[in-house]
Amino acid sequence: MDKTSRLCQYDDPEGIKCTEESGRHSHYCYWHDTSVDKSGEEVKEALLEYTRSGGMTRGICLKGANLKNIDLVNHYHKQGFDFSYTDFYRADLSGAHLFNINLTQASLMKCDLRYANLNCANLTMANLLGVKWKGCKIEHLMIGKKLIQEQKARQLVKENNKHAALDYFEQAEEIYRDLRKHAEHEGIFSMSGRLIQRELTMRRLQMPQMSFRRFSSKVVDLFCGYGEDPVRIVGISLILITLCAALYTITGLSYQGQVLAWDSANSLKENITLFFSCL
Image 1 (cartoon, rainbow, N blue to C red):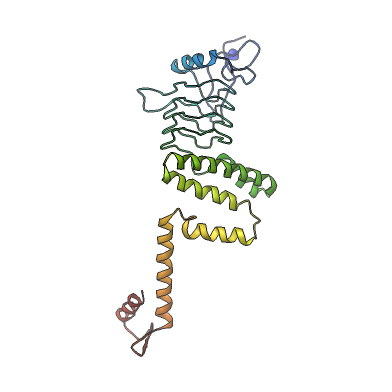
Image 2 (cartoon, helix red, strand yellow):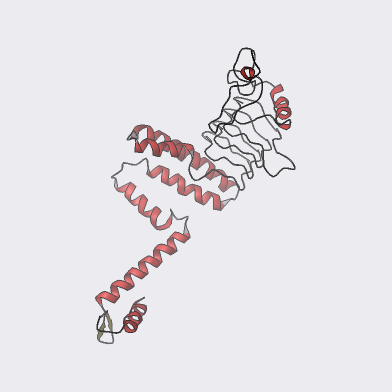
């Protein structure tokens, strides 16, 4: 058997390969082998040693791992450790130090993140369903424009599989709600404002398409972002004022017994002055 055939066969969706040796009875190394139980007490120290020695942490399997209070901060480096595509299903990361960590596309489903430090972490497209957030630090947390459940749901709608899409929209709403409540508790109100918009949008997309409830919800979102987007309120107000001024200019404005209206016979200056008077 040549050296190449003994290498771990893990190949992530971005084409990055693992260079560790595979096990005797598997085509994968210890860390990428999904069949290996990693719930033992020795896993935390082994992971620390593996990470600090430059081992590939992308896509490793840490299902049910006991990583309580682990320090996975890449000290003295600008970029954090890369745990993209890693499976942390039901892992215990309570009290863990995860500052600036990259968890893009990772599965954190039912993961215990209580009192962990996730400041500046990247959770774009990560599965956050059922995460325990209590006491977790989440300042400057990045979750991307859409959750992975939301993206899947919208794709299913395009494929006309509305029943399956509803389940994913419901999951997305639950994740946004849990994270929004935690952001409110932590006093990060700018983040909670954005999250409640996403939460209510997911709720709207579960309503019957032609229902009045869905239509009215869309109108509230459009006009004020469910009360969380003051810029949108100002913008809509300016548009309405300008439209009304234009209507007054065309239909005429009664002033001191005289009706003033746009007239092609008038000079451009007179018509523009009238418009600003109406405004």
